[in-house]
Length: 175
Image 1 (cartoon, rainbow, N blue to C red):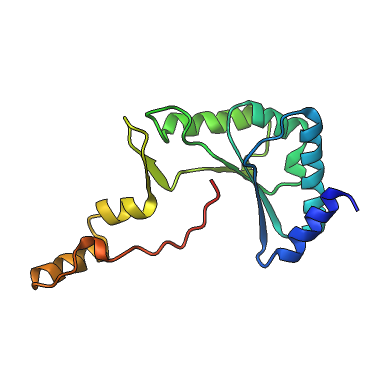
Image 2: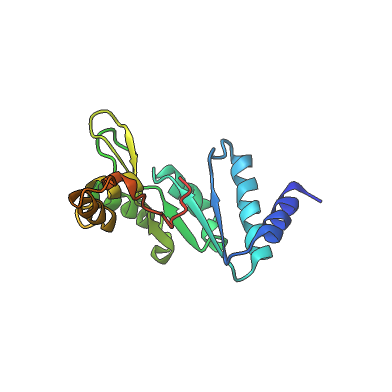
């Protein structure tokens, strides 16, 4: 049994949802690796059938060309573009979002399969330090129930402050 088959069987057996996300931490570095990745996607889609297969990619024109040349849209239902963190000091801009869509269209890829990636974190414009969505919401959202309740409690002489009410996130992100 080849490695792709073992991998797809393992994914199939482990799946308890209706979707499979393939997010590359390290992109294939050769034509052979990319062809192997395309084969993995093909086998994954065949094994999962009607389940949704998604893939995250970095929009840099090179990735879109590879997606097009290898015909990956035959095996991937949705492509999540990681259209953020490209320009230092400009974490997630409208210009980058437009460029992402333009790159996709330039390769004649199906627009219905493109998902514009947005970050659920922020970066400081000068230092590049990151804050999670939870930190942003907790510290800067003026109508957050946790902030309002924290202030009311404080006004009544209680000890609870604004930060004693953690926001529970229901998001799982692969970045």
